[in-house]
Length: 322
Image: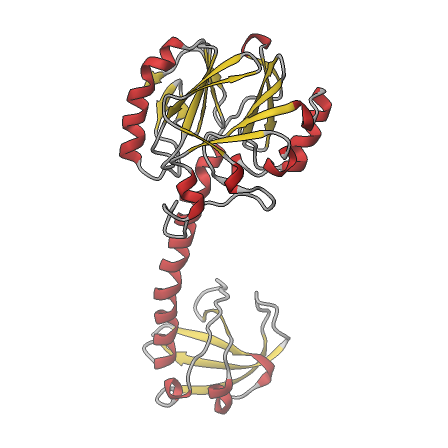
């Protein structure tokens, strides 16, 4: 019969088991393996019929750092205490596996993101600033800069802009591809600029649509939703002599929008991800089916553009569709 050693803290005897709420299972008597498993809230009645007895004191090193001397209590396999251990393990192990799986699902896509680095890009006509997992793009016009998205780190973006010789006040237009936090965090820096967003996307902010079961999106403190300039699908803007086409690209969010500048540069935000030169559904999208439809609809405009500039996956001159 296999037995386990149960080490009880504070030199308590078996009569005090009902008062204990933390134990260390040190290992099987027949083996040298050691385990440290916390067990909480074990009720008194669980011990009433347990076959427990005092074997004597021993100096047992424990992996949980308990003190040197304890009452060493042996209980038979099949006792109610052993059943408690099994019961706890049956609960703990699936929970641990679930949590680990959730973490992998949530964070692994971030590890695959390869945003464009800081510096002139697309033949030198555009300046990119990489902040964490995002690229923020700047297009110079006759009257100042157009900025596409606002990144996830205001301090980091402002510092990189200063190094590039772009002042906060030099940005006259901010065109948001969507309202997720990593695309809007630095908006308070640009209170002097006109901030644009699709009229569908604002529904995520005012509560008419939910991003997930947790609710909608929000803008940083100090940014007035009512001051946003709302765009319709197909609308065109003239920004300092530069023409910008606004195209609705739903899927990642309900109101995602892409922008094509002077028929040459297509800024796509999170409309899709790029893996191995192929466009695929972007992680964390609200509607994968709608994302695929949008990608098919964007194929023509992508082919017509010289450069496709994504927020998280770099810059491309040619992209295949999944």
